[in-house]
Length: 574
Image: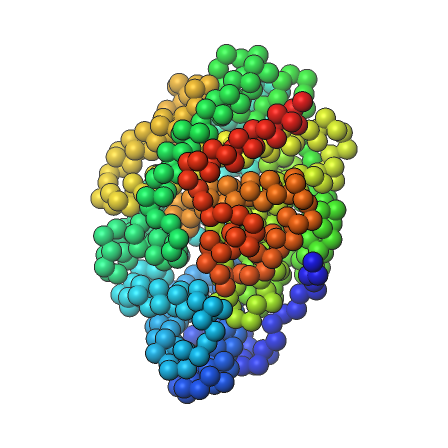
């Protein structure tokens, strides 16, 4: 394997080197040039595609930086205004031109001379975009883009006071790991009470988004937003029925394992029943895992971990560090969550997260690091559209990195017992996340199949789903007010609708990669990198095949994979 992390910014040949995007007028002439150009010959088409790709990359990177800066500081009005200006005054102007360029490409006689294998997924996406485009949806999409960012502003301001110190909710979560049960319960209730304060605002925000999304679907001729969104996300290789089978398989094959894990946990804590504030706890006398103390240390330890796994992986993070492409520490006024943002021109992506010194932050960091490796490997592909890989494969990149990197977690833990605990926690999380994935996905199907639902209907359906996938060990009595709005903590519902089943599909793929890794480390890493370097130039089943995987999330496959995880858990425990 010979990959280089010495990533170079894409050289401009169509746009001026000093080009910056301030207003629509800055970019309009380049769209007009592309529209007017003759592409009847194959050489002319090749140049045209490269120029279009260059323009798309420059615009995409500008939009990404606006969003990055805003999420890093949600209290800065200028940064919010800059992002909103793009959403309301630049992107809506681009849409009709993008549609016209798509049609120009598809209708060109020379398109038949393009390599049918290399361009298959690219042209399939172009045709899909043409099919979905409706001019009347442009203002709706612009409004939705602005509204979606309000979620980060509302939740970024959430803090609680514990022991007379103000903490963000991410920082306060460390108290949920305390060996003292009263400390955990106090922190849990304070966090939930703070969420309840913003419940009306988040309900109002979601109602607006639901209405806008439903109208987009109707305008495009779809029965509901779910069907529209499946098409928009390019879900060519599985259907809503496959999602329903996944939900059922989680109940059938994974919930029993989770019940077993939670009974064991309750026993270790000396409890008959767990309460929600016990989920991250250790027995009295066992201190919580603290793999790092601040973002800088987290980054350095992750670089060391990645270097040991494969030097190329570590060099990717080092390159990002030299470019200041990290914002890792939690602080007030910062949007929640974590992400890896690919930068189409620069190549080296940006990682954003809210680290507070917990074990879950280590997992987030190596997860986003896996996404970053994907960005590096796909960047050399010649067209911007080739780099638009399916999200299901993107999450295999990140989740497989969580599992493979465990072999090198001595970068974070000197104590063998702490390292063992960390690995056990990770593998338990691999299993316990599945019901939440099923709940969030199934909830979204219901939300958009019933767009006229009332707030009471929504709450009732949410609680019904929580109960459907509930384990037998955790007691939620007296906590109904907290459970009723628990869906509001999932930013995907607000910002990236229907993007969640990907985590379930990809978790299965990641387990498959890890299974290969336990048998032949070098070969598994080679296949992993080969698959990621294909970007979006292959179909989802083909990308899985390149990684040595079957694209299969049937109940039988799920059963086999989770049994492997269970075996590994038992091996580490013993």
